[in-house]
Every structure is written in structure tokens, then in C-alpha cells.
Length: 253
Ligand code: 13P
Image (cartoon, rainbow, N blue to C red; front, side, top):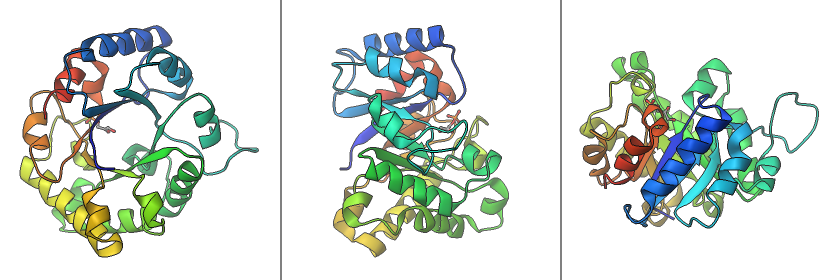
């Protein structure tokens, strides 16, 4: 279902103590001060997921997501974590295909498509990331790149499964750089993605798909980005590590 969402991807940041402090601050700041129609998803590192679920218990606005999972359910995959394990501690969402996974860990669309299917088969919800690099944008290949990532990772899902999937457009050149996509650039790509969905699944499904923007989104630029008709919220990195900044983004619709 299409929903306004602000998700915080903590990446590899925060010790246990820092995670508790940040989560408690976000819970406190969100009380009575945020629009309850905006869903908040916290995506801490694996070791903190269970504690995060415990801290947000009874909070209907905040959910917990993982930053990754493996495509298999169990077995000899040293260092990996499965969707079933995530579900067993109360995780609801899983980020799949973040550009840092694609580039540093060489995850390709075929592997990511398997992960997405496993997440859905487990009853969790994928947040599937796509995004082009600066050379890809500058050479005019940006739309082809996004099309390939979306088709390769998602387009063999059934309509029902696709409807459970959130998409995050995160231009690689905007991640952690302080250079945000302009409002026009974000809208242009979100609209392109929604058109791809219309062609594949029809306009009803496309109209129900949540598409988030990520990449140097902060409390100063979120309002302008979220005002676009095809931008349903944000996947926030750096600014999700400071409670007030994060809540200010939640309040940017
Ligand atoms: P920044 O907000 O730090 O640019 O990171 C965005 C991101 O990668 C979220 O997944």
C-alpha cells in the first residue's frame, strides 16, 4: 500500500549504548509531534535489531528493518543472516540492494532478486534500492541503469508480492556526499520508475507503490523533495543518526 515513509538506514554506525539512546530519543520526539500517517522505519545493524524491536514495542508508528539478509533460509553461509532469523526477532522490513552492497559486496540483480523473493516468502517487506553512478548519469545511461535494476530485481514478482515492496531511488552520487538530487531530478526518476511499474503491473499497482528518495536528504531539503507527486518519503543515512534531524525529516511532508 502506498504510504508516506521515512526510514533511517544507520549503516555501520552506533554501539549498543548509542543505539539505545538514539532509539529512545526518536520514540520520545515522535510522540504527539509527528503526523501518525507517516510511517517511521529504523534500520540499525543486525546486532541491535532485537533490542530496537523491544524498545519500540507498542509504538504503532515505528517499525524495525534490517539492512540486508541472505537469499537462503539457513545453512553454511558464515557471517550471514537469513530473513527467517530477522522475522524471529520481530523485524518487518529488509533493505535489499543498497548501492553499498552492490558495489562493495558485488551483489548483482540476480542475487538481489533471490533475496527479495526470500524476504517476501518469509512474510517480510523488502525496501529495494536502485540508483545510478555519476558517470552513468553524465553519459545519459541513467534511465537504462534504473530500468535494468528494477526489472532484474523485481519484475518477476507476482502482482501481490510486488504490492508489498517498497522502492528506494538512491542516486549513488548523492549518497553521503552532501550533494542532493534536485527536486526535479528526483521527481523525474520517480515518475520514470512509476511508469515502468504501470507498463508491467498496471496503473492501480503503480499508484499503490511507495517510492522513497535517498541521498543526502536532510531536514533542510526534505520538504522540497517530499512535495513531489511521485516522492513518497525518504531513506535517510547520515541525518538518521541525529534524533532531532531525523524527526524534522519525518515532519517534512
Ligand atoms: P545519506 O543520507 O547519508 O546520503 O545516505 C543515504 C543512504 O544511503 C540511505 O540508504
